[in-house]
Image (cartoon, rainbow, N blue to C red; front, side, top):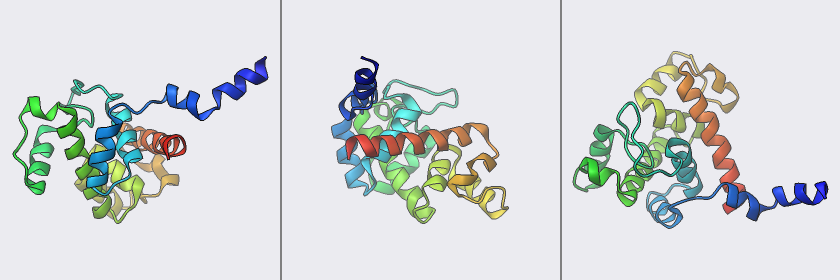
Length: 171
């Protein structure tokens, strides 16, 4: 009986039930348009908001991908769309479009180095660049513990874990 239960727990369909990807069609569409892995966008979204579109952080970040209004306005200008209002920023399609573009932008900025781009999504690209230039953090996954901000350290580890899990379950 125990062996059967253990087998069930490790079945992909059971794990998909435990780790669902909400808003999957929107994530697939917007991530594909931004040329970024949808599983990465889904992982960031899960870690940032647990797929709650009405989530607002203590810092004022809004929506599924927890975008700061100023960052969201900057992204909107970069991709040629109107600056979103606070209400629009909470809409899943707009929030995921902007967040997908932003992680794609950060991946390019950090030459495809996933831990660095994920850290920049959380702490900001200037801050991460400073850590790298001053050798506070090497940018490697094995040295995540060297990231000087606890929240960012945990964010990077959780996103990488969730990204790999989603990749196994949904690819």
